[in-house]
Image (cartoon, rainbow, N blue to C red; front, top):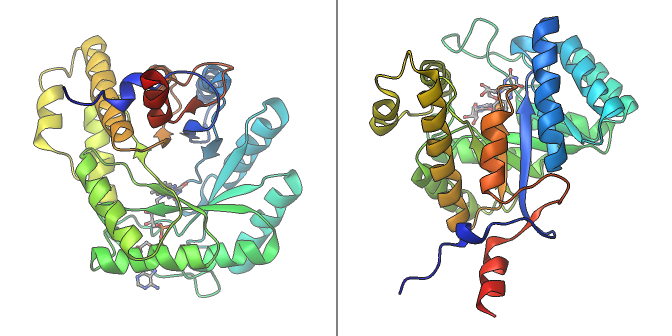
Amino acid sequence: MSAPRPSRFARAGAAPGIRVSFEFFPPKTAEMEQTLWEAIARLAPLEPNFVSVTYGAAGSTRERTHATVKRILAETMLTPAAHLTCVAATRAEVDAVIRAYAQAGVRHIVALRGDPPGGIDERYAPHPGGYRNAADLAAGIKRIADIEISVAAYPEKHPDSPSVAADIDMLKAKVDAGATRAITQFFFENDLYFRYLDRVRGRGIGIPIVPGILPVQNFKQARNFAMRAGASVPAWLAERFDGLDDDPATRKLIAAAVAAEQVLDLVDHGVTDFHFYTMNRADLVYAICHLLGVRPGKGQTPHPEERVEQQRT
Ligand SMILES: Cc1cc2nc3c(=O)[nH]c(=O)nc-3n(C[C@H](O)[C@H](O)[C@H](O)COP(=O)(O)OP(=O)(O)OC[C@H]3O[C@@H](n4cnc5c(N)ncnc54)[C@H](O)[C@@H]3O)c2cc1C
């Protein structure tokens, strides 16, 4: 008889175990603000490791990101992580944002380079008086305050990168500059993540490489994101959503099934930390967390292998 699937035992219990984090974007309108806060209220009882708030392209949401992070600090028990990019800004401008976060009590920054202001088709050029890239930014943050730093990682390599090896060298530079966690760009084929992880470990990088999971609420939108991010969209995924453009209810069920399949397979291969791109919507992410054994007010779930051991003894 084959060994039981560890994910079958991913149930609520005591730490240490499966840890989740949630990513939100800062709202533009009062209506979007309400949607965001409904999502936060629904997901907060799952006691995520942290919740992150993105920084709009070229710093366009600087104030809104800051306001959202401050409200999370003021009104919830959650630990916020503020995304920060260095594109199109001087060091002094970026340093002022870092200092403001440190003063507000933010203890975690997701340090990013950002995309060129003209979009991904434009060649990236650092601001003449700015940080050169995410590694340079991470070093700058560490010079200013003792803040935890997460950075981005790309299982299918960053589109600007000439090779996976060069891309992983960049990740190494970010770790050497002080990053203690990498969050991946989303991917749909877990093998891409595992192959990448092997290469990252082979390069001597030991920090957690947390898979970024995008539950596909809207296939066309996800395909557009993927195109811009250099992530591949497998034919089987398109096939699953085929014919459902006018059927949101079925689309949602399919989305939950696809994401469930992906995270449970990751659990079965020993993954314990997950970062969810929530798109400011709680329902799919909540359901997937439930499947992972993450329950309101119960803290984190034990590691699946511990559960298997518990079942055996
Ligand atoms: C988890 C996650 C969160 C994100 N959040 C945001 C956000 O909030 N706001 C936003 O605008 N964008 C965000 N992005 C997108 C990100 O800003 C873009 O992917 C950007 O193009 C690269 O940022 P980076 O921090 O990965 O850059 P870096 O790690 O600095 O560089 C990316 C790649 O460019 C190449 N490169 C950079 N510098 C050099 C160099 N000196 N020499 C050679 N090659 C170099 C390398 O191949 C490197 O892998 C996010 C991405 C991820 C995965």
